[in-house]
Image (tube, rainbow, N blue to C red; front, side, top):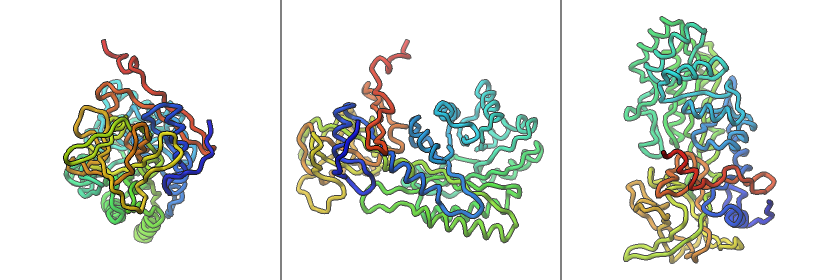
Length: 437
């Protein structure tokens, strides 16, 4: 099914009001819709990042692991970053070869899972150790098979859009801390393991200046501690701008900085390091829209409320992080846009955008302390469409979709040909209950 309208919502995407209304009518609401063009554009931007001696871009599949999107992104030339053994299996089922997948996980696979991990490594899976325990568990296998795992280091400093998305400071537990590196090296030497792939990730939505500083920090750590390093991975966390006034990471400028620093490293040491990055949010966040219907309007002495049929069970980021997402109000038939976050006019009507869950935090307009924050929007009618933007990353993949026994919503791709293609069916009540005994 195609749509040829051109009533655009914002400058981020070709997705438009008519397509939103068609998706709502065809698949029901709420429904996620992803813009293929923007995903491909963002993939190209990352693949074109300046580099000194080679670049590999790994999509952080935890951001959104739909099979169609994994195929789209890997067909564009990206490799994958997986955070669990099940994500590895999921990627393989999407047709991605093991040698294009790097597993960096908190899991300490043992028993049957350990045997499966070792089998996958023999088939080409890349693996980073993220703790001394993981290193000890893989040591004998690595020695027997001449396998050199990568290593994720904990630098002691980090950055993120909130404290819960900072993965590099001493309040997080990701990677092997610098204070444990000597023990890691002693064990690796005993087993004949050489650390050739050095990985670090400081957080999601990291400030660009912190990202630049992390480049310098990691190269310094490699120079001091890792004489066999061949690959430096700076992780992901490239900031994306969902809201007006926010500024995304400048991938080109960050690339030029990394390129210069890696070249300086080569001039000092004679060692050429290949570079890797692991963007997730940057690739898919702004490609995603949650199309919902306005069910009701309410008022208290303090606030107006717009109640939609999709809330925290399709986008928990405002509740978890105080994240801000653009809200668009369009007519129920999609013929015109009533308001967007990009309007420059002042509106008299303000409202909290609420969902249908029995939870006072089920709002799309919360601050970082969990307080509701009304937004200036056009007052909708019941039956109008409210669209939540910026939901391509960490929404479908980590939504509490069965809360209140709601079912997981469908996912649709808005293709390059401007067609709407179903890529995940709506979950049924029977499917939700299937495993109960």
